[in-house]
Image 1 (tube, chains in turn orange, blue):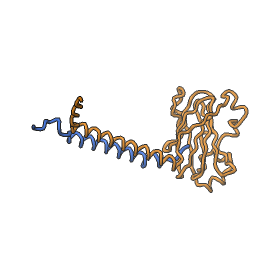
Image 2 (cartoon, helix red, strand yellow; image 1 turned 45 degrees about the vertical axis):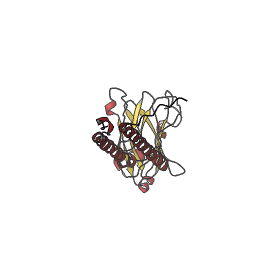
Image 3 (cartoon, chains in turn yellow, purple; image 1 turned 90 degrees about the vertical axis):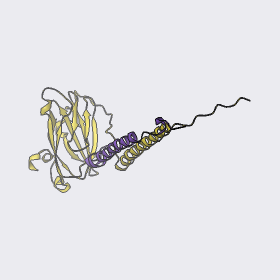
Image 4 (cartoon, chains in turn green, orange; image 1 turned 90 degrees about the horizontal axis):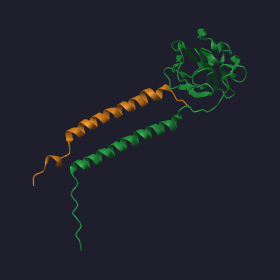
Length: 186
Length: 43
């Protein structure tokens, strides 16, 4: 009967490397658990909405006609904001929104790709012609937010930005639909 | 038989690597909980 070859003892360096690998796997597991737990607790997820629209006729009929743009209060008390991003402005370029209220932004573009970002928040998405981008959020604090286009869209891209004024809920409810586009009253 | 230098784990390297990884992990936690989450939920 042939003797089995003796197994050489494991060098201490290999044991150390295995422990290090285990520690790093545990660290990654902790990071993943933190992300998953907070995402579930806060209902966080990247904006995802696949909805098409004809960029050539969106200004003629449908929800993005000019007099339907801006903030609209829904039956459940939430607010839907409809915006157009076009070279080189947002329409409307000034919004008044309520604090501590579910807000849904619906944005589209009739010309080229634009970016939609509210500085100081996690609201951030691309606006692609032919699609309606949708982002839901809630402003915890009253204040002013700038809304620059963050996708290069042409020569005057740097001048394309808008303003969002977040006011207390009761102050917002006293405003008419046209007043919600006038940030000067804030 | 005397132990060769390869038989002992590289303690200095482990300490340096552990401190570096620990600092990175703390930085990640700080960014996530103190910067990302307070900027509000999106969906």
